[in-house]
Length: 88
Image 1 (cartoon, rainbow, N blue to C red):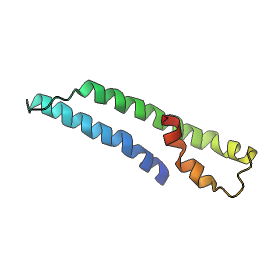
Image 2 (cartoon, rainbow, N blue to C red):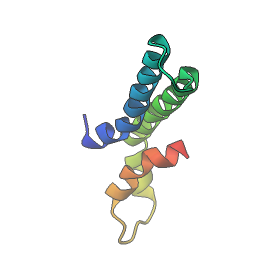
Image 3 (cartoon, helix red, strand yellow):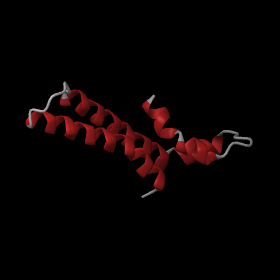
Image 4 (tube, rainbow, N blue to C red):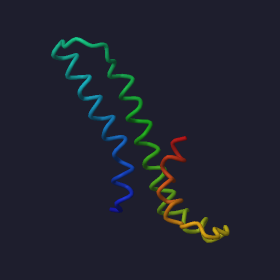
């Protein structure tokens, strides 16, 4: 697995950790108003688009980059920015 995929996965994994912490707070009846349902939606959203970005990177990006003139731009930069672009 590519290093860029692991870096992209940090966002959903962090949100998953925050979700688990919110669930633990509710179970242990700790103070603080956190709704795990909101976090779960964010985990699902970012995970779905993580897989979309990986699919685009694996199957479409090379063909797309070969058809457009990049000039001095490095194709690796476009690859690194793919996940944030898909999320936006």
